View 1 (cartoon, one colour):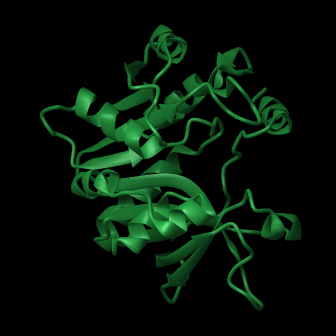
View 2 (view 1 turned 180 degrees about the horizontal axis):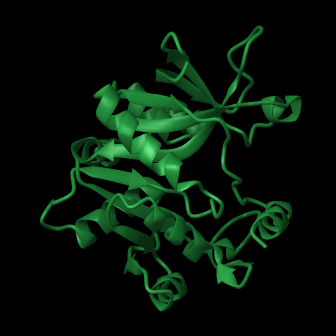
Length: 242
């Protein structure tokens, strides 16, 4: 496998406008995410953005970034456009999609999702972590992964993703960690599909893949990384990384 790591980023955010350039310990958040991705040592890392200020911030730090159409509808469309620009020769057969709001991401989790793709034979691989508090169980911003796990509950197959509390009854719920590894052909097929009914209802892109019959492997990690979505999250990140 020959991965390339892509990080879509945009300035528009309902709850935290301009968050890719939010300062965390003297460094823009997107640069911190790029540095975490580089530390995984899996392959080239490219930031994809429709805004020149993000591209400039990454390049100033010594990173690589490409401009994409600012009107692209989703992060998946943005990474596909960036992939075609950054790798026109199709040298990379695995595409890792990292969210640009995970400044404290453990590079080992990036390695884990790529390993899960290879081990499972699935079209796509992603991560999930146990939820350990009732607030997150009820929070629609915390996406739950419903997974058919193996006997050790370490690797499984995604059955569904939802913002609701699911599944019902006793037992652990799992927080979906929005990091994906795609086989290149799977990503190409995915972005060619129209948005699906469940995807539109839940506002979750990964449901498009499941509705189309694509397989998503899920590997369990111990803890979900801090996702910066609000000013309060940004303060947590600043304290954590100070």
